[in-house]
Length: 268
Image (cartoon, rainbow, N blue to C red; front, side, top):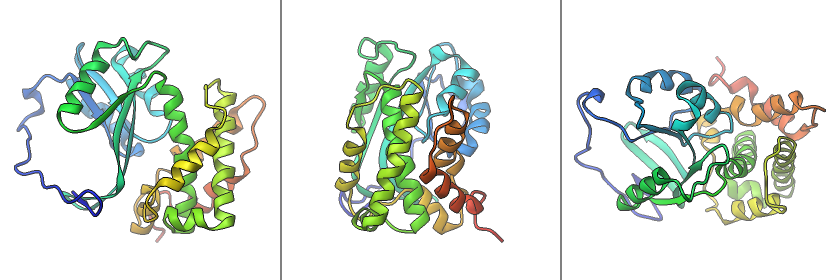
């Protein structure tokens, strides 16, 4: 792993097993791109036992429902990852900035603080040197990340610029705020509890990032890769249209339209 701020780290030799069937699994982390969620669920299905907990650290707000449908709600924890990183080549990861932590908790209003599996996971991660936080309301936290993620991913991708350039320009800064306000209103319409000043707070978070940090969707766009747009700004447009009454999300709708030709990768 390459990091200008934290220094480079090399994992050698890598710890792996010859056959996945050789182990029992307490936790399985789902970290694939969102378009691979269905195939990843089928890949891990044989290894999910009655004692296994599955956690998605993917982007978006629809992933946990898919996991619950596949394995049952009791086997799922909600999760969020905070890290700015890109794959430079197979086996080489570049981290931008210093943020690197995992947040997780019980879904469906269960008490995360009293959860033995949450405490066990936190202890295991901390022994490995990973910052780990148990969330008292993981659903709210997932949506709070979604608010900033939809804005950062769509605006940096549409402008082909890092967060430093986007937040320092008056027009694109206002666009970030507009997108976050639309996603906030959508969350509130769905009964999600959010801090009153969530948009201002998330803007402060964006202001705190290293100026060269960008969203993975902006990187994927430059590399000609597929985009997670349908599960981010595109999902906001779809959920807003399905709301009763429908919600207006003009900024998300325009950004989704601008980026839609690139969803499957660089057009021929």
